[in-house]
Length: 435
Image (cartoon, rainbow, N blue to C red; front, side):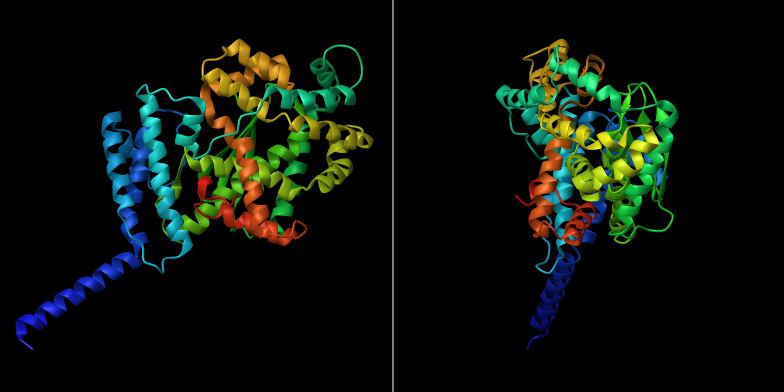
């Protein structure tokens, strides 16, 4: 063999070996692109105060973002990052989580680009916006569907006057009084945490604190701070009903947002070194998974019968409410829950210009049984967060279907928790959920 031919063989062999290593270590190829993605999110946050929901990555990256970049520059960089990510070829042996990581980053960057376009004045209709930002579109619901549920409630709540007034009169009997609020929430949080820890191992030191606030468009919020810690705020502008104790404790805490963020930090940031999960852009596909798992997590932790039993024994007495009425209350709430998508329809019509703010509030009162104050607050939420509303109900339905298909036997509690944990520990996209 000629020396030149031998050298050529060696060079080709080395090149193939390097290419194989590049494919096999796809996560190493993605690391610099992931860093650019984080910096893009932080940069866009300088233009949109609601965009960065959480960040606990390197402090110097946040400091660099303080030097404001133009939207045009952000858009160009996002396009380059997206193109580079699409060009990455992973080895056949790459694990599922690495594959999900690549698809997640591509879709998150696409959503970032859509948000840039919106800030530049691009107008999308409700469904176009939700698809671009959250990787999903909520199905439309006709007025007749809500009217059928309202007819059932009309029979369930007899009396004189409008149904909305009768419902509010009924519900006012189940308000948590302010002097009992903290005790009730603490009892709910303790129960949610206990049930979660029976199935999910959380890292030592995880915890959150609760604050009661006013002047917000939302009822509860989790501000994840990194190092396995959260700040949970509860809005006390309006009366808080007894069902909100478990709802908020699970949704914002265990096994909802707090657990979701803790597991992402533990499994993806610390164990794998994936810095992209140190930032959470609110207007992105991640939010549908976050809100959907937080809402479905209520049902995972407290199936209906368990919840009624716990509230009868613990929360109703803690709130000073009559425990004998717990079934009555939740029978009515089960019907009201079927009106959830009325909120989406109000937002769709409002944002698409079919109705104005007053019309949206009226729709919420008529078909969602909101009182006037809550309808006004909800319209304020829609003004601020727009099509984000789909992430709660559509997100829950998509997550529920995914978990129940994957876990199989509906009576297998352990399998359901295991599937739920896998979902909140991974970078799966809404479009990647089982259908």
